[in-house]
Image (tube, rainbow, N blue to C red; front, side, top):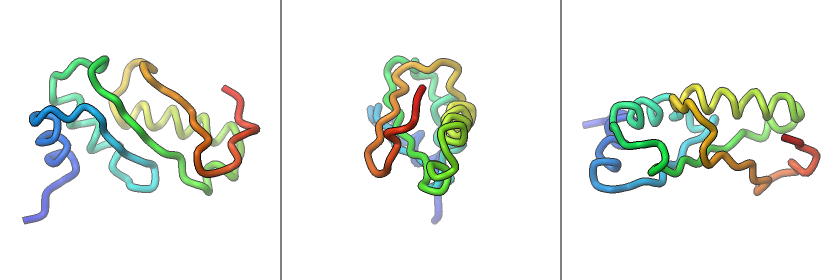
Length: 97
């Protein structure tokens, strides 16, 4: 039986998980966001990681900023609590907040 990302994340949250991983490339941000919204768990208790895909990074800082904003929307996040930009894989050195 195949399950949605929302269902899997909902199960993980009910078991006590508080760190969630999603990404533009995975295409799971909206499903993760739905599970967060439905959980009733205060946002302050959750840690959410997402990643911007290389092709977006190559388009420049404005594209990265737009993608980060979309990540917040898709994950139903009303606040930027805990949002960090970490240049782990590529040359985000030129990105400015």
